[in-house]
Amino acid sequence: MCDQTFLANVFGSCDKCFKQRALRPVFKKSQQLSYCSTCAEIHQVAERVEALGQFVMKTRRTLKGHGNKVLCMDWCKDKRRIVSSSQDGKVIVWDSFTTNKEHAVTMPCTWVMACAYAPSGCAIACGGLDNKCSVYPLTFDKNENMAAKKKSVAMHTNYLSACSFTNSDMQILTASGDGTCALWDVESGQLLQSFHGHGADVLCLDLAPSETGNTFVSGGCDKKAMVWDMRSGQCVQAFETHESDINSVRYYPSGDAFASGSDDATCRLYDLRADREVAIYSKESIIFGASSVDFSLSGRLLFAGYNDYTINVWDVLKGSRVSILFGHENRVSTLRVSPDGTAFCSGSWDHTLRVWA
Amino acid sequence: MSSKVTISGDIGQACQAVEQLRMKVGIDRVKVSKVAADLLQFCTEQAKSNPFLVGIPAATNPFKEKKPCAIL
Image (cartoon, each protein chain N blue to C red):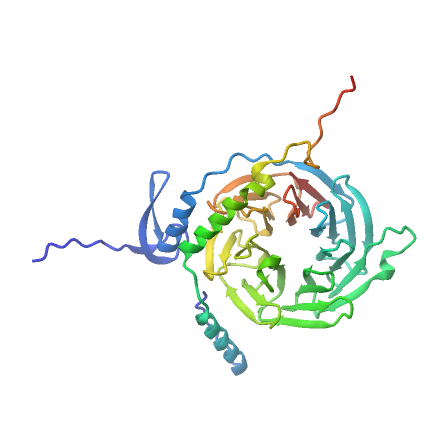
C-alpha cells in the first residue's frame, strides 16, 4: 500500500474567465476563488500594483453647436483643437480652450461616422453614408469656401465607419461597412493597399504608435479584432473572444497590446506578443455596450464610453473600475484622450461634446 | 486563439483558412507572466508623465478654472 499523498487537481470553470481549465486557489480580499493558470498569473501581477487614489474628473467644457447626434471626434496634435462630425452632416472644428467654433463644413450626406485630424493640423478627413472619405484643407481665409477645396480620397462600396491619417498627411487608412479596410494616397486618391478578412462590417481601426512599426488593428461586426501588416496587406493576428460587435479598438501606448470595446458590455485587453486576451473589464451592473475606448498616456487608465450614457474609468492593471462619470444625456458615441493626456473629450447622441479633466 | 472552424463550400476560402491557421501556429508566443510583468513595468515607468495620475497644478492646466484674482 502506498502512502503518497496526491494533490487533487480541480478541473472546472474559472471564476474569472469562466473557461474550463485546471484550477488553482487564489485569495482575493480573504475570499478563496479558483482561477485558471493564466488568470492566476495576471492576478499575481495585479496584486503587486498599488491601488489608485480617488479620481475627480469633471466636465470642464461643453461644446454645443451640433444639430444632431455627435458620431465621431478627433484631437489635433496641438492638444487644443478638436474636429467632430454628426448625423446632420456637419463637421465642426472647435478650439477646446475657448469653446469657439473655428471651421464648419456641411457634408453632402448625413451620418458622418468618421472624422480625423491630419498630423500637421492643416486638414481634416471625414466620411460616412456617402461611402467616401473626403479631405478638406483648413484655411483661415474667411473668403474661401472650405467645401470648394474638398478632395475625395477613398471610395468604398458601403458606408465609411472609421478613418485615420497615418504618420503623415499623405496617406489615409479607412474602414468600411463593406468589410474591408484600405490605405489611400491623399494626393492622387489611389488605393495603395486593401485589407480583406473581416466577415462583416468593419467598425473601427487604430494605428500602432509610431515607434512600433507598420501595423494597425481593426474591429468589426464579425466579433473579430484583426491586426494587419500595412505593407503586405496580410492579417498578422486575429482575436475572437468578444460575444458581439466590436465598436472600438485602441492600441496600448507601448504598442504591445490593444483594448477593444464591444456591444457585449465588456472591454477586453489583448496582448500581441502573448497572442491572447489578458483582461476583461466588465461588471454585472453594466449591461449596455461600450461604444468607444481610449487609454490614458501611461496606459494605466482605460476610459470607456457606454450606451447607458456613462463613461467608466477602468484600472487597466487591476481590472477594477476606478470611477464612473455622468453628464451626458444620451449614448456616448466617441471618446478620445488629448495628445498630452491632460484631458479627454467625449461626444454623445445628446448633440454635445464634453471635455473632462 | 479561436478553435472554431466554419464549414464553407468554397475551396478557395478553405485554403485561405488553412494558410491563416498555419501562420498562427508559426507565431512565437511570449508567456503571459512575462507579458503582464512588461505591461506593469511600462505603466509604472510612464506613470510620472501621466497627468491624470500625477495631476497638474491648476494654474497650468488650461481646462481647470483659474481662481479669480483680486486687484488690490
